[in-house]
Length: 497
Image 1: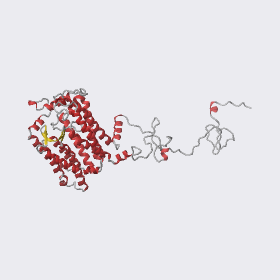
Image 2: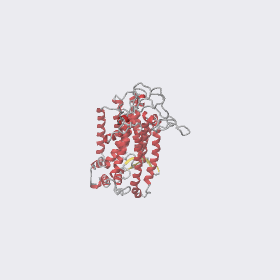
Image 3: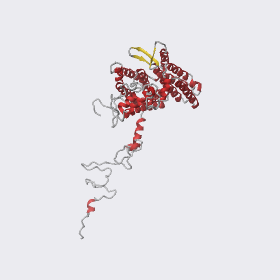
Image 4: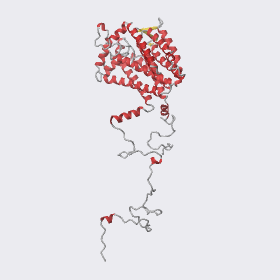
């Protein structure tokens, strides 16, 4: 017969598959590439993986969720945007977290206070030696005030909102009483032409008008919140009375001592409260016009205030050195350059610049730390103000909204007035830089006000939930590892999982 042909390469590589439906004989090895027959036992030493008929469902589909799209690298994590847009999206998501405002307020205020302590020490050494005092005299007093202020901040941040509201009227009454005592001859004392101080004995003195800012905020916020609950703020008489007369009482007592700088800040707080209540434009413009007319009259009636206005934008001390302080503040900033002359190496603090550790400490900061230092201070104040606006905008409690908005207006307006005067853009008003300048009377109420913002930031429902879930003993599930990327399992005493 014919000689059988040898199989080709394809025949040798491709095994012969049995016809469909045929059963292989017992003991025969399965043909590679063929499906196992149901009911047949696998040969020894081989493990077969059976599959169900039909499309296989993923774990995500079994849980009722759509599967995540896989990236080219095989990861199921959604791709992150690159460049400026991706950075913006990540920053926006980070800012939308519940505890962001809480951490920003706490961190920015602490950094401003610590940097202020450093600059107070650097700027006040020469002034202390000039007065035959120890070099650390002003720094020690400021450090003591900062320690007391930190305790007040912690106390205010832990107090409930109802207790803050309960302090409103007692604080207002005590502040008005102290401000009246300032005007009593023999009790009140004048500093730099302004009679607004009370001596407490020894080196300690008190300026009650600084506490008037906090009293106006708490009292005004409580008053407006109660009227909003009764739906009375739609009538202009309930919107203005008794808020405006109470503010005018504080302003009158302040102006009796000649302190127009503090009066400007108090007026800004009043307008901030009216703005938050949604005052009509005509009413708001009318009150603003009246305040502007009163301010012009007060400025024109005082030669000292007129000379300060005349020094706006001055580059020369002028006749009689009327613009000496304003011009030397500009000199200090100009000589700092990009990164400053170094900490402690200021030249203007050697008797050239008046008030280097109080009203013009920002100029010394610019001279020693340069543009980088001043921009850092501005960034910290901007972060603090923006976080305060966020707290005021996200709450549903009217008292929290008005109080947070009032505190933010106070700190922001005072920083703008102080820095604007140092830059020569605004008249010198004689107000300190909040949390930064030397002065315990200004530092204590400001730190208490920052504690208010922290308490309000913690009081948000989302922030409460986030704080409760941070630790196993603060509201979370006991013994559960929340930060692990694995499946959440309870920790066993033996250490096994």
